[in-house]
Length: 329
Image (cartoon, rainbow, N blue to C red):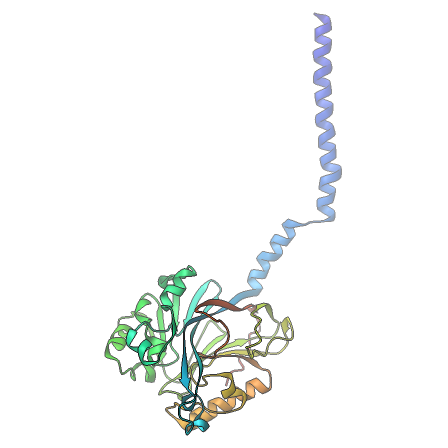
C-alpha cells in the first residue's frame, strides 16, 4: 500500500512539472514572438483602418451584341462613303463602388432592333448579368446616358433601382412602351445640367449625340491606386503607366458622343447627332483628355474587348475617401 501511494504521488508530481514546463514554453517562446512580431492582430487593425481611408471601385464591361455599322454613321467626314461598314460592338457598363451596384445604360432585348441593325452576335443583357450572379434587384442606380433604344431597352427590368437620366432625354423618348416602363420606376432623378452623388460621380448633360445626352464622369483623386486593369492591345486606356495615380484624373463613360476611339483620338466627330456644335465641343474635350493622359474614356460601341458576348472586369481601384478633387468640365 505504501509503495502505491508513493507511485501515485510521483505521477501527480510529474504531471504538475509537465504542466509548468508547457506554461513556461508558452510564456518564453510564443508570447515573446507575439511581442516581437505582432502579425495578424495588427494587420487586422490596419485593414479595418484602411476601410475608413479607401473605398473600392470596380468597373465591368458587358458586351451583348456585335454587328457591322455604316462608316458614314461613325465618321461625319465619311458621310459620302456609301456601302463601307466597320465592326461595331454593343456595350454597357457595371460599376461596383463600396458594395453598391450601378449600371451605366442597360442594352436592349427587342427582336425588331436585332433584325434592323443585323446583330449577328447577341445575348440578352439580363441573362449575362444573371450568369455573373448580378440580379436586377441588386442594382441600386441605373444611369441612362440618353434615350436611344440600345441604352434604355432593358430598363423595365430595374424597377427597384433609382433611375438617373436628364430631363431632356426622359421627355424625348419616342417609343411609348419604353417611356411607360421608365415612368413606372418609383425612384427617379430627372436632372437638368448636371447631377452629382457619392462625392466622385458626376453626370453632365452635353447634348451632342442626342437631345439631353449625358456623360458620366468619375473624378479620381490623387493617390488613387490601381489594383487591377484589363490588359488588351485593343484598348486606348491612358492611366496605365503607374500603379498609383499621382494627379487627379477621370474615368469618362462617354455614351455615344463618340462611337469608336478614332473619333476622339483623331478628333473626328460621329455622323449621328442632335447638335453639331455640342458634338464638336464634346469630341474636342475628349481629344484633350486623351492627348494629355488625364483619364480613361469608355464608349458604348468600341470593338475589341471581347470576341464573344459576356462580362469582363476592366478596372479595380482603391479610392481615397479624403481630399477628393473634382476636375470635370
